[in-house]
Structure formats: structure tokens, C-alpha cells
Length: 555
Image 1 (cartoon, rainbow, N blue to C red):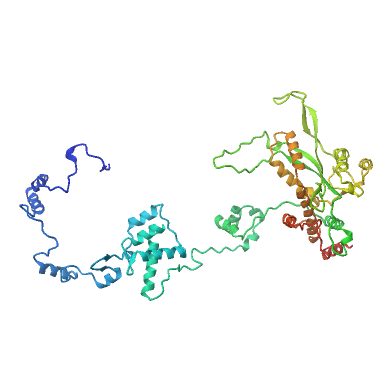
Image 2: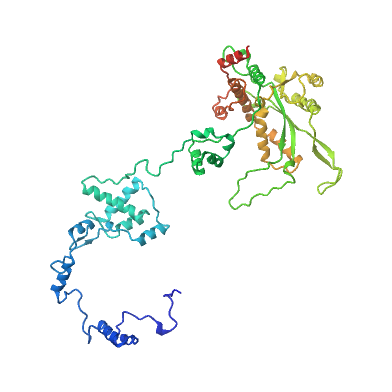
């Protein structure tokens, strides 16, 4: 057990003696009563060299037998001066730089190695940082501080320690700077304390051959971990290659398979969207203001996997549902057209025709904790061609008549839809009779098959509207319907206009791809162009591209 020296002993006899007080020799010798007679007498002779209060000998005086002492020291190779003091070799004096002056003694302390205790203290202490590289400004400041604490090129005592603490660096770093100063002065060169490390110093990067990565199957390149395992490279190295830009992340989506006939139909559709009056001079697309895009989409109340940003101490949200496959959702029929703007840039028509859910109201067959039996509840309904025809006649056509601009009432209005089996045929008689009663020239047309990228709804509007819906909370179908309708009517008209411009850019890319769908959706920085006042109403198309498309179609 360790003895605590800070505590007082319990008994007076255990107190430590005061070494500053004189002690009688007889009392001290009495404590050695356990020694035998010879040992006791020898010890008495050792500790009592002076008797009768005689003065202690002067240790600076030479011994009586000086000649014998000199002979022994010289035999051991130790040189003594004329005064009897040891003389250090001149080489050692020059190496350590120690000088003895009449007035001041200056210690060249920088030559002394730091003790292990000081190194451990610096390594374990949090107040001192060990920077590997000092900046040029720091080096200059340390050099100036050392000059202030030097005398005729020699540092005063504790100079390196004081400067190290002043700049919060390691003492060895300060010593290395001063050593550079001494070397430059000794060689007669200007003092240069700049870093001598080359620009490519440090651990070199491991060269990795990435040429064989392209041969790895895509199914083994879904994550950094799987790719590193397939390539035989460490995961950390692979992640660093990704951060360096040698690898890129790509989100891939499945696209419809296109036959040659489908590609030709897509090319013909692209040519039909061009303004025929500009083909000979500067081809551009039509304004598309008389085309209504119509389609259906399921809107979900929530997602199975959601990402949230929480505080560090905030509790994780807990969401429950009876069955993950039974998340409430509703199908909506949506119709939009291109917004209209006047010459001053003011929106005169937002292009939103309407959105309608496919639901019905029916009385509840049983009572529950939330409602009584017979209460009207909202239910989704089956959607077929008859349902679509009924919605178009009873909802879509009246909405077009109510909101369509009067200045365009004499133009033909086209309702563009895809080739789904539930959609109304272009020559449907019931729909034609309903259109005749509106007084407008409204016609149906089908876009090419397997071409969702030719409809602004599938191209971007539906995904944008669903993302807005996810920012709201829907606990039942009625709340979901209200949230979707609110998101639709609050949708910014400029965003809808931009989707139409993106559609025209996709038509150009389709013509470049020969009618295929292997292309990237173009981005033209529409917000910047709008801020500059140079956003076009319709995009231009290259005349040579049009001629090549016509040649491939044999037109």
C-alpha cells in the first residue's frame, strides 16, 4: 500500500526528523543498537569525523596528498589545469558552445536534448500542438523571437522552451529553426529558414489501375463495398477514388423497349411538333398552347422509407401501419396545358385545367370506433374506359369551356393522351357528341407508344406534384385528396412552363438518337435565362438535324 506523505502520522514518535536541526552524534548512534560491535565502531568513525565542535572541512581545498591524486587522474586520462580543476577538451567546448565570461554566463541551451520527461509531457499535454509543417510567417516570427532572446549568437537559458510555449509548438521545431540559422551563419550564407520539404512530400498515393473496372458486371457495382470486393481493392481506397472524381455515381431507371416501328413513330411525332412556317429559315417548335396533356396517376399518402433531419438529441420518429402494402392511395385524372404570358411577363392563364380523384361515396356497412354504421365513407373505384369517358365528358370538357382563353376559342384544341387501353378512342362517338355541345373544336390524339417522355405529365409534372404531397400529412383518403388538390392548384405556373420547354428539348434529343430513348434529359438553365429576360417561348431546331430525320424516314 502506498504511503501518503501529505498526512500526519498518528503518533509523535513517527514524525520525520527535521534535517535542518543539529543532531547529536551520540543520539544518532544509539539508533543503531542492532549492529554488532565492529560495525558500530566503523560507522561511528564514518559519521563522526569531527570532534569537539570543530569546523567542517572546506571541500574546495585541495587534498593533502595532491601529487598522488594528480597521478591517479592522469593515469585515467583526465586532464587537470594548473589550478586543479578539470579541463574540458576544446572540441567539446566548441561543440556545445559554452563560454565563461567575467560578467555574464550564457548557456547555449539549444544544443541540449530535451529530456524524456519533457517529451512525454508535451505528447500527453493538450495545450501544446505538434504541427508537422509551419508556415513561412510562423517560421519568421519564431526566428525573430529567438533573436530577441540571444546574446552574440548564443541563446539564453530556456529560450527555446519559452518560444515554444509562446507559439504553441513543439520545442524541437523551435530548435530546428535555430540550428538552420547557425548553419547559415557558419557557412557565411544569408539566413534561410524556409521549409525545405518538396512539394510532393508525404506518403505517395497508391496507383490503382481502374481499366478493369469497366469489365466488372453492373450487378456487382451497386455499392462501393461490392465494387471494392469485385475489384480486389480496399473499400477506403475505392471511396477515395470516388471523392477524387475518378468514379461517378449514376442512378439508372428502366426505359420502355422500342422497336424500329416505335422509333419511326417517335420521329414522325417530333416532326409534327415543328412550326411548318419556319422550316425554310430558322426551324422552331410550335408554342404548344393549344395542346392539353391528360393522364392518370396514383398518389400515395406516404412512403415506406422516409428521410428526416433531426436534432442530435431529438427522438427518432415512430411510424406504424397495419400493412405496408395497404398504404392509402388515390388515382387522379389530371389535365394541363402550357401557361400564357403577356408581353410584360405577367401570367394570364396558369395552364391548369383540373384534377379529379377516382373515388366514390358509400355508406359504411359496419360501425367502428371512428364512425357509426351508415356514415358515408370515401372509397376508391375501378377505372376502365367507361369511367374515363364519363370523367372526360362530365368533368374535363366543362373545365376546358370554363377556363379556356377567349382569344383562342377559334383554334383547334388537342387533348393528348397515351395508348392505355382505358383511354377513350380518338373517334369515340359519345365524346364527339359531348364536344359538339360545347361549341369548341376539341379533338383527341394519341402520342406514340412506349413514349412517356413525350408527355409533360410523365416527364416531370407528376413527380413534382407527388413530392409536394409528401411534404404534407395524410392520415386517410379524404386528407390525401385535399392535399393533392391543394398542391395542384398551388403549383407555380412558371415551373409548368419550364416542363414544356424541357419537352421540346427532349424532342431534339430524340431526333439525335434516331427515335430512341437513350439520351439524357437536357438542361438549359431556364431560371437564369428567365432572370436575364431571354427565356425563349419555343426552342429552335437545327435544320441539318431535320433533314437527316426526313432522310431516315424517306420523306
